[in-house]
Image 1 (cartoon, rainbow, N blue to C red):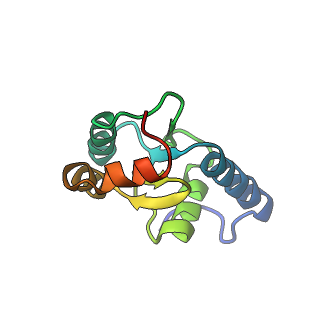
Image 2 (spheres, rainbow, N blue to C red):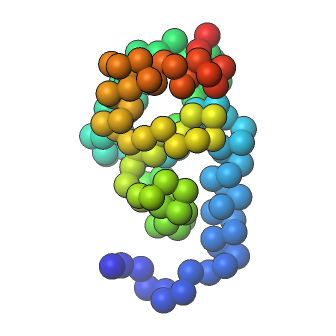
Image 3 (spheres, rainbow, N blue to C red):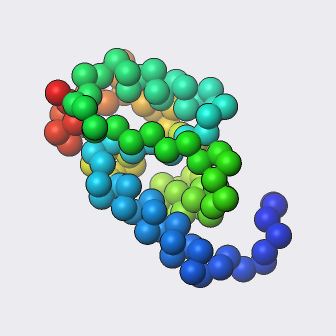
Length: 120
């Protein structure tokens, strides 16, 4: 399992939720990632094929963040999985790396980005 605490610190989880929720509220596209993750690279490549408006995408590498595990736990609450990448468009979970790459090919990613007003 991992982690040394048997119970999560409520204040810390509240701060993590505020951090994640604020990002989702303030950016049209948010990706939670790890710098070494090949699926994150796949999502980044797929998003790079879209004509995103400036300042639309917020890329958040969580590796090395002291709250990394808590962030992933909260992402699991939101999306059903704690793996990265977690791609959100208009504060709604879009998918992971494979979903985002497939969406770039089948048009679903472009449609979601257009609906969010994220395409230039």
